[in-house]
Length: 270
Ligand SMILES: Nc1ncnc2c1ncn2[C@@H]1O[C@H](COP(=O)(O)OP(=O)(O)OP(=O)(O)O)[C@@H](O)[C@H]1O
Ligand SMILES: [Mg+2]
Image 1 (tube, rainbow, N blue to C red):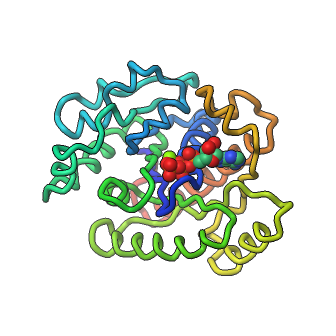
Image 2: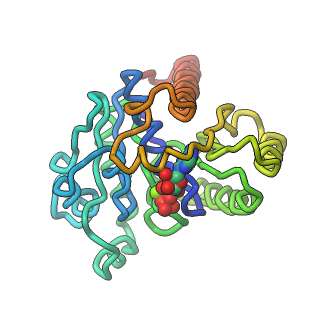
């Protein structure tokens, strides 16, 4: 049974999609069957994984509205162990807004995710910026949430907000929800303030809540991403590619520990 990780943040532009795409590619490189679900209408995951525009014509949006079946919108990528379901072409129309707000529709994403986890090792869900309905859906359907944050003071403020929301979802909808980890991204050691924010995050949270590994800032990154390939398939020696591989190892180690603990409790194992 695969593990589901949502990548979410209150703040836009913090590296959610970049992390989703590159963590997924790193897991897939290590032969983990990985599926990325795009919950953001920008369809950035599809671009990041090299889908064609035609492949992004329909996706989760259409499945939600009953216009497509899950199996019809899953696409292979350049990596054999990596598949993705795009968001689709729909925008947040009244129809969709109404749909996502309907009472009783919240468990739908969970139903899809549970059906998909049987044939995968990891499902990563890329959330849109903010804590709107779709992000709450994702938090309701996922096992854990990975929160990327930039190494700047404002991030600490928004972090408190997202942690509050995670606690609320855990209390009201998904009691199993855990924090996969806070991930410091776009780190530039030349900036004192970036170093200070990192220190503050490490000092303020328990060790198991913050990833050891920090993702460095890499200027060429945007262009690599724009041509539709994860950095690891372009330049595996780049610092940022190595950092994402290291992150994948941390995620896999955590998973192994969870399964070992479960087995020790006499529960089901993988
Ligand atoms: N490590 C990095 N070094 C340099 N640039 C980066 C890095 N990670 C991400 N970026 C750039 O930062 C921008 C925002 O990243 P990304 O789109 O992943 O954020 P996001 O949180 O998904 O944004 P949104 O909230 O709009 O969905 C992009 O232009 C991306 O290429
Ligand atoms: Mg994004």
